[in-house]
Length: 201
Image (cartoon, rainbow, N blue to C red; front, side, top):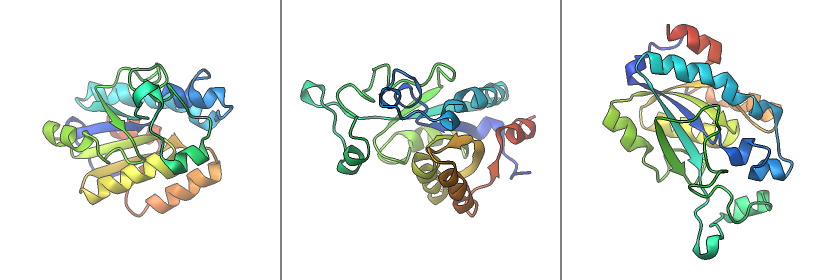
């Protein structure tokens, strides 16, 4: 059993569950970067969205964003350009199909555009949480060792209680996912989606 949380002061936060990552016609799908472990996340998380809503909680989607410049060419950090050379014009652009939350989870109550790993870095996430009196986050999404880990650590620094969904997040390599869960276990409770559904009853 995790630390008791009040659903009315809790948000489910998903990281980067967007068409450009998950949909076959998105940027990663077109580049052959699909992952079964990642593709099953939206359907697995959906019941938790519904359960939390029913108990007065909210759902926030943090979505990776490539800021388009003049002519539409995006600003891409050098390390990302080297890691993902297939990214280009139109990918992860605000308002575009690829940037949008996947249909299985849409619409979120609040959407946060993020330009780096953490959903807190230079975003309005903390403002939303404080304005709504939210002091607990249930976190899922992709990738476990990237955006998810960075967000959980940043929440910890802000004294925001988190619960990390062990099967509600994924990485492109299962061994990296598992290692990250072990690493994060010192700062956050880790529970399965089914465990959280039972605890929210």
